Each structure stands twice: as structure tokens, then as C-alpha cells.
Length: 434
Image (cartoon, rainbow, N blue to C red):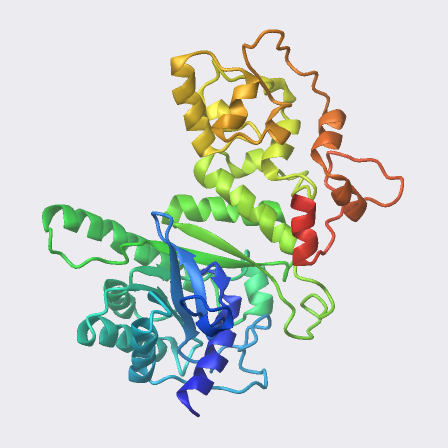
């Protein structure tokens, strides 16, 4: 099989891993007379810590796999074309793409070829050739293979910038049903090892400036959403625990795309739960940057997110006793919890009110989304009065007409309790959120 054919096959097999943000397109300079070009063959985009968009070659080492995970298109029992990159072949391909300015780095994952140790050795050889022979200093994200020897994972971590171990499914029960070759222990063991090595390396770097770095960009993981009965509350609690115990940089959520006809999985006609994935990302953001805890957003009685409201608005409507917030006196932590106010706009409010009192009409200039925030804040302008807050009135004002038509049957009234989440296309999701 030619290298280009392998690339098309193995980059397509890698598209279900969402640890990189988006896939690329075929777009050449000759199409519109512009400059630059992009290739859809495995090119995806991620973002660096300083906000730069980085193009990565996203590809599998092989789609041959010894495991039989029912949700995976590359599972052992699935009859699909198979291919394997030789380490030098993939390293040469990466450098050729880099020299043509298609990419700035590599995202490398793999099916389990023979066994975890052998697979990890092949991945190490690819990255070693890039780092030591080609002197490639670009970004490399490598997937740690659960079950591989710790020494191999350590070697891979010294060569890669970021590592990740996909937790795949939110519970041990789900793993047992759909991925019998995997277990919670096998997945969490390398995750804990990587966390320990990152901490150890940080202390080494303080004492020895030239000590080799270990995964300096940290580690991440991915969970599949919608393939199992696990609720949003269970997923969010697991996410919170992963951040606390393993200090992950990101937890990625992947809406399950039906790829197999199996009684244990959703039917092939079921659409991916894109809106549910979006709500989980919003809640993840609240955990990481807004000081929320999982138990504040959901609980045992309410285990699913409201499809028509983002998690922050839903929390605010359930805690109206804290609102309206006086933007001239409230502490930073409470201002952050106001719907429509983000981290940047909250900091701008703190800076601006040192120079003088703020009115609610000043907030829009500071980046506040007043469509949502106007119900929850008050300022010191002439004639300003705290808005009269009732949950039903605010809920009706926050939810768009198109969203009501999408989720509510004819004549049904809005409720703070989440209605049944509809399965929407990507276009329908963004129409409801706009």
C-alpha cells in the first residue's frame, strides 16, 4: 500500500479522537488566487497556551487492533481495510508536511498492534526519529498506551510535549460491557504514572536547569458521550475527580457517532448527542475557570443538563436568592457566577470600579453579554432598581423562540426541570444557542 493511501486510511480512522479541536479541508491557493493551502488528509487544529492555532498531522500508527471495543470502528471484529505505518515512513511523512508548511506538529495515536508494549515501542521510534535525527522541535501529542510498561511510557513522555490516556467510558460497568479488554485500573495506572512523572520533573527542573523535560504540556483524556446510560451528573463528577487527582489540562467529550449495529449501543439511526456534548463542555469550563463544583451544577435528583439553558444560567435561576448582584460591591467570585459575565469581563469590572462607580449600561463596553446579565445585576445609576426576578419570567426571556419550538410540544409550558433532550444536527444546535 502506498504512503498516501495509508495516510488517507489512518487519518480517517483517527477522526473520532477529539483531543484536537477540528479537522481540516482541501483548499488550494489556485482556488481563489490567494496564498497558502490546506489538506484534509489528517490536518487538524489545536490551540496553544497563548491562544495560537496550531495545525497538526492527526494520524494513527495503525488501525490494526487486538482489542474488540464495540463502539470503535477499528475494533478487531470489524471488517475494514487495515494499514500500518513503518516508524521511519511516518516520521518522513511528518517532516515532508512540515517543510511544505502544512503542519506545525504531530498528533500520534494507534490501535493495539500485537500488544501494548510493541505498539508503544513503534510510537517511540517515530518520535525519536523526529526529535533526534531530524531535530524536529515542533509540538508532538502522543497517546499513552494503557497496559504498556512504565519505562516505555516514561521514554515516550521525554520525547513528546503532551500525553493523554483516553478513559473512553465513564464507568467500570460500561467498560466491562463495551470494552472487555480494558479496565479502569489499566487506564488510571498510566494516568497516575504520568502525573507523578510531571510533578517529579517539575522539581528536577528547579534544581537542574538542563534536566530533560517530561510532557511539559501536561496530559489530557477523552470520554465518549451517549454510548452508555451514564448521566451528565456521573460524567461531571468523574471529570471533577480527574482534574483534582490527576491535574489534567483538559477532559475532552466526544458525542458518540454510531458505527456499529449492536444491541448494547444506540441504533445506527440515532443522531450524535451534540447539544449534550456542548453542555458538558460549558460545565467543564465552569469547573476549571469559574470556581464551580459538580454538585452545584447537578445533583442526584437532577442528573441531566437543561437543553435550553447553559449550566450557568440554570444554576443562577435555581439560586435567585443571591441575585441581583451589585457590580460595585460584589466580590470577584460572585461576579464570576453572573450569567453573561466571563473571566475577562469580571476582571475588567474590578479594574473599572476602582476608578468610579459603574452603571449597568457601562457593562456592555466591558464585554458583558447583557442579554443574559441584565436580569442578575444592578448598578448605581440614577433610577436603577433591582429587576423583579421570578424564575418563569427570566426563563421565558432567556430561551429563544426557535429553541422553544425545537424542544417543547405544542402548548407545553417552559419549566426549570430539564425537558427531554432532543437529538439535533450541528446546524440545529447552533441555531438554538444563538
